[in-house]
Image (tube, rainbow, N blue to C red; front, side, top):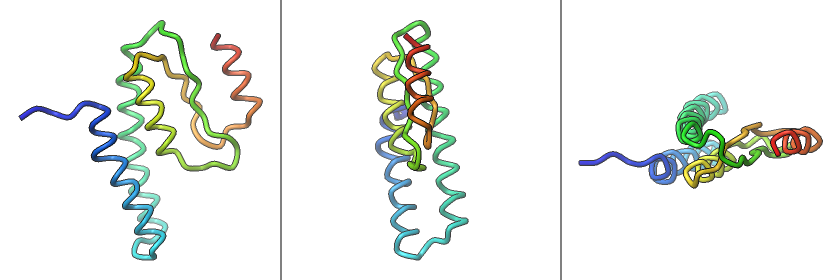
Length: 111
């Protein structure tokens, strides 16, 4: 039996779990502390997948990955960064809630 690729792990395991945690919180069947705890575990796994894939792309053209101020959700951003890394892009990961001027400045330095 084979193992899942980084993309498969993200798409078939981690993102569905993230969605389930969010739905359970929204329905009131999961408290805030449990939601934060569960999503923190999943984010760590997603970060590790991004880093693992991105290491293979040293010297490749890079994408700055960030969400703008006020957006605190990171799952979709990490999924995007992972997909880009799998496709061969270098990743400059700034994360959620990043001021636009910082994103632009980072992109300009990355060119």
